[in-house]
Structure formats: structure tokens, C-alpha cells
Amino acid sequence: MTAAVPHIIALEDMLAHPEYLSLREIPGLHLDLRYASDNNFIGHDLYGRFDGAYLHQQAAAQLQKAVALLAARKPDWRFRVLDALRPGRVQRVLWAKVAGTPEEIYVADPDKGSIHSFGMAIDITLDDEDGNEVDMGTPFDDFTLLAHPAHEPTMLAEGRLSQAQLANRQLLRDCLYGAGFHGIPAEWWHFDAADKHWIRQHLALVE
Ligand SMILES: [Zn+2]
Image 1 (tube, protein in one colour):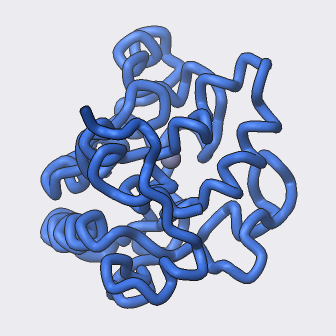
Image 2 (image 1 turned 180 degrees about the vertical axis):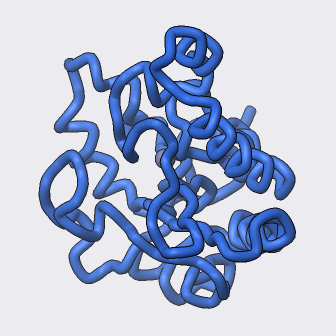
């Protein structure tokens, strides 16, 4: 039997660990980390001195491949990274905010470990040629069904999302999926770099 307790690495040790990469090393990304600013649903900076722009090397390699795929499809557009490695200590702040509310489904229980805390998930969107966020139909951390990829056909049929907005989401997915990421049903901006059960068994949770 494998142990259920995740292997833990302290944030301070992660920063110097060769298995983790700073996204500042990957050219062509616009880093706009919302939890490192006041522009998030909590309303204040949760990252402090940690700049948040890290991923496990496997996810970082896949992201580099996604950058190449986007460059082939839309040479003047680029990725805007909204969140990457999110330490367990920050995940607990988010969880405390939503626990017991309808928004609870959008935030992973810190006891199980958000895939973000393993450095294996990314929240990401697209910038157009002028550096403006592309219209995806909702902003980041929109907690309504409009943000659910699973509801896109219905929202399109009801006229609540446009063909153009869905084409933008599809371009984002094409690039990320082509690089080995996969999406989740409730957030168009969130992608996991591998199977979450495999991640929780094999990789360290950054605390
Ligand atoms: Zn996410």
C-alpha cells in the first residue's frame, strides 16, 4: 500500500530545488499572477515575497511546447499566466474564504492538495497582438456556469456566449492539450499537466 500522506517540500526549499523552474526562464509569456496582486476574488496579495511564477519542470516543459504551438497558430498573440505554483499555505486561505459556500466547488480542499500546490497546474489565458486579454466570455475566477467548458454548447445555443468567444477558448485548449495538458469541467482557464491521482502519488506538495 502507498502512503496517503503527500510528500511535502517547503516553499523556501522548492525555490532552490532543480525540479522546479521559474517561468521567467520561458520566453514569450506575460506573467499576470492575480494572487500576487489585489486583483483577485480575495481582494489582496496572497503571495507576499513569493513571486509565484514557478512550475514543476514537467509542467514547465509542456508549457514551452504550448508556447511553440501558439506561435505557429497566432504569431502575434501570447499566453498570459494568471496563476501557477500555489503553495499549500495560500490554498488554505482560498479554502477558508469559500468553505461552506456555493463557490466551494471551485477551490480544491487543501488537505487533498490542489494540483497547483504540486506545481502541475496553470491558470492561463491569451493576449492579442495589442497585449489585451482576449475575450473568453468571462473573466478569470468567474464562479458561474458561463465559465464551465462543459456548459459551452448550452450557453452558445442560449446566446450567452458567442462563436468568437468559444473559438478563443478552443485555441487556448488546442495549444495546451497539444502540449499534454488537460482541462477541467468548471474553469476554462485551468489546466492540469498530468493525471491528478498520479501527481498526488508521485510528486511533492509545496507547502
Ligand atoms: Zn487553477
